[in-house]
Image (cartoon, rainbow over all chains, first blue to last red; front, side, top):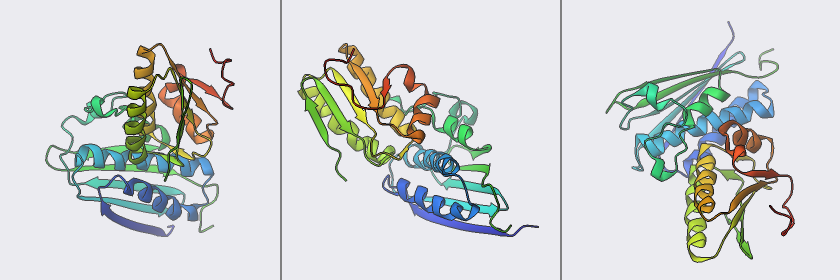
Length: 146
Length: 111
């Protein structure tokens, strides 16, 4: 059984923290010996999930976003959670180009990018119950413990 | 961080910052729309020369400006995009409605 390595971040849902979350996760996954493309993939997917929490989950209110990151062998698992308004229809929210905020120029591609750049994406949410996005990706040419 | 906007004739060149995410896209949108409202602009160039990261918020920014400038008969160009930015432009379909060039086209040569 390969060792598990985990980390957890909690930060305010301010847009300036989107870049912080990307850099923190990129630094944590660097021990997996990822390719540059894999780092970009994870940063993009994470950025989409965190931005969703800022823009949709909390609608600009400043509350807490949690990012959990877990490395086991060559698998990277991410979770992005907010305690915001939640999603009424998850399937619809995940449709390409669907957005509830066209006036804010949201492209409706957030979940599409998460699915394109990660191996697995799963969403748990309900109105008033917040949202949790779970993502997994196989990363790295060699695992850190090899 | 500075986001220089340069206007030459009817062309607005936007120097895209190192990271084009939701945070930076909002700031660029405000300034670009102010300039589009005040000046006679027919073409927008997004210069990605120093940009290492873009997500779907950047797609929203480009598409929003494209819709505005298209109504005026203008066009949008992206220049000097790196591999990550190109993947986002391709995956999102943005490449279908804008021109993507290595370098800034000489003025007068633009279609």
